[in-house]
Each structure stands twice: as C-alpha cells, then as structure tokens.
Image (cartoon, rainbow, N blue to C red):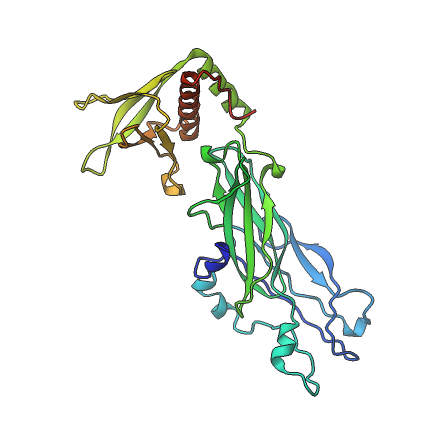
Length: 331
C-alpha cells in the first residue's frame, strides 16, 4: 500500500508502557482501566492501571500513554531515543524447551492507536487536528490525509502527512479522513486506523460563506482585488480578477494592463497548491494551458471563496452550453 512504503517520513507519536509478568503462567495478561490524568497535553490524557482482579501486591501503575498532536508531538528523528535511553520493553515469556526469544517477541501485541479523533471546524480555511493515544510500544506513526470522491475512489492528498491539516476548497463536496499507521522501535507495523472528519459527512462551507456565494451567483458577476507575480522578480503587483457568468479576466493596475480575458472552457482549471506557506495562493490555468498564479490582495477575502466562485461559474457556463443546468455542488 502507498502508505506503508513511507517509513522515512516525519513521525509524530510516542508512548511509554508499563510492564507486568504473571508468575504462574508463561502467558502475558494485561487488564486496562482508563483513568483521566491532567498531563500538559492537548485534550484529555489517559493512564492505565492493572485490572483489580490481580492481587494488590502484584499491581503496578502503568506509565501514561502519550497523546500526540501537532504542538506536542515529539519527533523521533530529533532526539526521542536520547531523551528516553531506558525505554522499557514488554517482558519476554520465560523460555521453554523448543521455544526461542524470537518466537516470544512475535507474541508481543503489535503497536496500536486508541481514541483516534479529529477536532476543529471542517470548513475551508480552517485547521483540523488529529489526536489519539499510542499503545503497545508505539514509537512513531505515519499519517495520510485522504479524500473519498463520489465515484468511490480514494485520493491521497499530496504533502498532507502530518496530524494537522488545512481544509481547502478542494475538499468541498468530498469526504475527508486521516489514516494513521503505528510503528514500534522494531519497525513492526500495526493496523491502520482511520477516522473521518465532519462525522463522515461531506465537507461544506460555513453558513456565511454559503450565503455569500449564493448571492454572488444570483447577481452573476463579481470582482476581486488580487495580486499577480511580477515576471522575473520576487514580488507581486495589484490586479483585478473580474468574474462573469460566461468568463473571466485578469487586469493589472500598472502598465501590464489586461493580462487575460477568456470564456470559461472545459479545459479551464482552478488549482490550489498544498501547504501552509502557500495558503493564500491559487492558480488559473487557461484553455491554452497558460498558468496564472494569484492571491487575494488583503485578508478580508478568502482564497477558498474565490476558488469556489470561479469553479461554480465555470461549471455553470460549461453545462449551459450543453443545455444543462448546474446547481451548487454543496448543500
């Protein structure tokens, strides 16, 4: 699977597990009772104690399992092993004739994740945060944010391999989820755990943005103050993006004047680059294949709102030429 091949990616979860060995049996038995503890981590934290059925003299409080997130997740590559030189392993089963250490190790439970959840508002321009508890010796995790499309296909989102994710216009009208695969320090892989954003409902816009887009479509035209990169220079110049029912235009305020005027075509594409460092940018690819990078001129206009308006006008124009009527693609 695509996700399993990425062992060299940055990883963001850790755990410390306690241990206990039952004297009268060579099988390891652990009973867990979840208790809340106030650790300096995001959201509720958890620790485990052995089941009350075990004698009090044999009970040991388990170390708190680590909850991971974007702000407090340690990176194993940046010194986790040095910070925990005495990492406790699960105890091995006493060796019997015909058994071996490797066979006992294989009986250890695979690394796992409990309580995986996504918090945050699932609207374009907002941040989502995945969090959970690592168990069974989990020392690292692989993350993949994915979209589930209407045709049943699943699309892995390029570059989205962290517990945090910025929702964009690309997610609207799709199901959004994160897949997490835990690993331990022996590079054993646990089962992939998956959870959906927005309670497994399609991503949509917040009510205010919905109303704004609907009014724009009713009027039939809108203009946005944007910025366009200056050729061969690391700077932007002011421009106006004018959108109408049949097409759009880009006009610079300076000497460049009109940069592009075009009717919406099936080949016209409106794209969003991935990444927080480019969270205000988008691009228009004309029917001729020329790409124009743009960004809103101020913070009062959402990049994702402009993208959704462009895509809706384009879709309606193309469908109109086919004799069809295209409505909003979000409810």
